[in-house]
Length: 382
Image 1: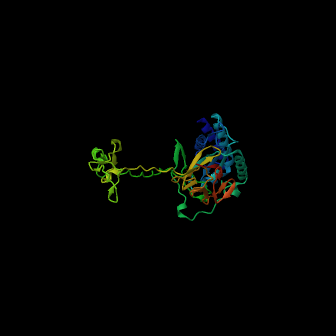
Image 2 (image 1 turned 90 degrees about the vertical axis):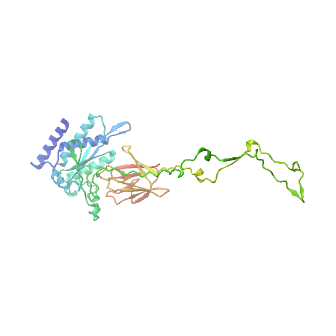
Image 3 (image 1 turned 120 degrees about the vertical axis):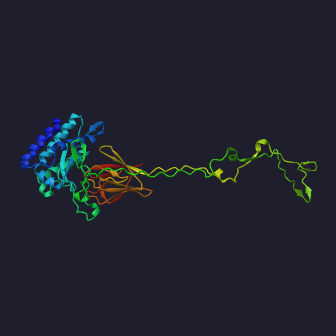
């Protein structure tokens, strides 16, 4: 706990010096706790090494952005050093020096915040660091804590897209954050996840109904057997011009009966009883058609199911959820037409790239690289 208190003391001092007695909008100690929690949740084994996420995005309300703006540089630097020390204590490594940045989420209320940790490659991390340094050196041109790489669209006119703020969720005891706030994509795709929900299970098919007349007695269930040895079949002898064919043996002046051996008994099913053939046949559900998206950095695997799967930051039934503030609520859609998979951009804020090419719609091939926000996902047909 001393690490958290020390962080809070240093950040509170830097904030107080920048704002001259203005009260902090939220607890900096809770900010450190949330960052540590996110680091632990997003640490993966990469090439045999525990690799911690190097990018930390702090989402704040528009009101708090104005209050925190003069102290962003000091707070971000302190948060980066705290994360680096926490990782060293657990023997985690980074792809580069950790970077902390602030962004505005219009759906957040005053005093609420959220933290996202992302695994990015070294080149992406360096590019973001340069953009952040440019932002901090002249943030007024960018309108607050909106990253210069993020393009903010015009507000949506659809009433269903109006921002909705959920109650804060306490995930670490006294740590209260707005981790499930919802906003529309007019906030540059920066809102966080809504409250979890439980998907309804699919209804199971009804089992075949039993035979209406109940089980049959064993004697009735057996087929009828005709013993032709005891009742020989008599074959009439053909005649030619009124004379019997002499090749057919005769007994007592008539045609000889043809005896059928015991082993050649003729079995005739009882076709009069319709219940004899009522056998329920179990229905076998076909395997669903699916594909895989593999995170190049962390190795995390996501599954898409035919005929369509929504990809985005918001939870939808059967969708793929990406925990990246640069991903829109409904960012893209995977569709299967019976022969091939296709990805369609859903008018996302930051676009969809396939093999580093910005696309609106594109047929996918095994091994294609899909870029959504800061995530690089390799497409695999299953």
